[in-house]
Amino acid sequence: MPIEQFNIIESTLREGEQFVGANFTTEQKVCIAEALDRFGVEYLELTSPAASPQSLEDLKVITGLGLKAKILTHVRCTVEDAALAVDTGVTGIDVVIGTSSVLRKFSHGKDIPAIIAMACEVVDYIRGQGLEVRFSTEDSFRSVPEDILGIYEQVDKLGVTRVGIADTVGVATPMQVYNLVSTLRQRVKCDIEFHGHNDSGCAIANAFCALEAGATHVDTSILGIGERNGIPSLGGLVARMYAYDRDLVKKYNLPLIGELDHMVAEMVGVDIPFNNYITGITAFTHKAGIHAKAVLNNPETYEILSPQDFGLTRYISIAHRLTGWNAVKSRAEQLGLPIPDDEIKRLTGHIKELADRRALTLDDVDSVLREWADEHGSGGA
Ligand code: HCA
Ligand code: CU
Picture 1 (cartoon, helix red, strand yellow):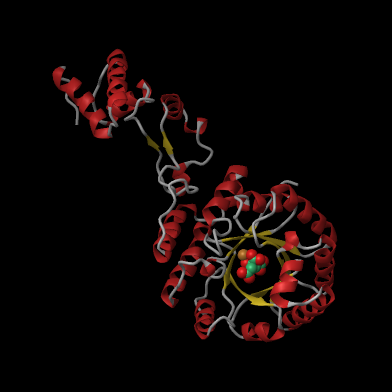
Picture 2 (cartoon, rainbow, N blue to C red):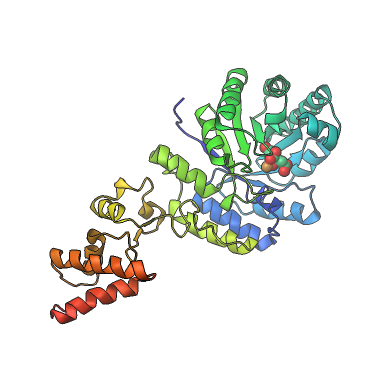
């Protein structure tokens, strides 16, 4: 079905804290929360207050900031954990329990009827406290579908705010996600959240398919940080949604993506990958002469994302053997060198020959153009 709207549950401060390089201080958490709030995500999900005394304190600090984003915390499926979260000022509590046979056997040892009983008790308790409650089944795609659909139906009847499907190990394919969410959409009235890991490269595609199948909320983290290789990155999901329908992401402050990515990369000690969505160093770089010519005529020819919408600029790489005369001409114009087209074409041939012999830099190209201008007395800046 067409996607008409969607919500982001930004989990840098929960799933992201499970990234091996993440050890956020209170100040860093505040910086992240405030920046995400300026960006405009609907929800922030924070680590359980049961995780450590500092986690409890930090949760209260963040709920005390008075942000527009709703604050959630993420707890195990027990009344004790939920009770710890109730007085922290959160809008809602995300509850999760493993439902696959491998997790039931090796993680908590409960069977499905016991899980249903715990889920109902906790959902009922949180509802009774007047908070939003989300119930999610960990490792949904290695669980028996009827098991989890049955649990979702039960908690839906109790008035759960959202149910969550979690691809905990990153095993699901987009088609499987589409099918499970579509089936779930028929069976519950509440909102549906999708949380998917990226172990086999499908996290963003899976999140997108979940939305196409009727999910209402998607989990992200900045740069995708999380357990192992993480979940959909905020920038990647936004790029996907922008490419689908720009109007869907108008509600966000898109030029902040760069600041968010750089800030978190530094905090967790990683570089932004060269091929990262939007903020990768090559994300808006065009190289081949054929591409450069078309992009110079109309950027839409080879860009589905407009860099200026993200506060960025495109770059046309010209110092190589695949270059073309349109790109070289554009460079000459940038330098203020009025060189006639037939000469630009000849100089482009020369640049290609040079590039066949050694790697060139933009300075090399500029020198070729400037030398011509000096010889012909045509000035330039
Ligand atoms: C975890 C597992 C989780 C939970 C997702 C959810 C997952 O607690 O670390 O609550 O929807 O990937 O299953 O992140
Ligand atoms: Cu996860």
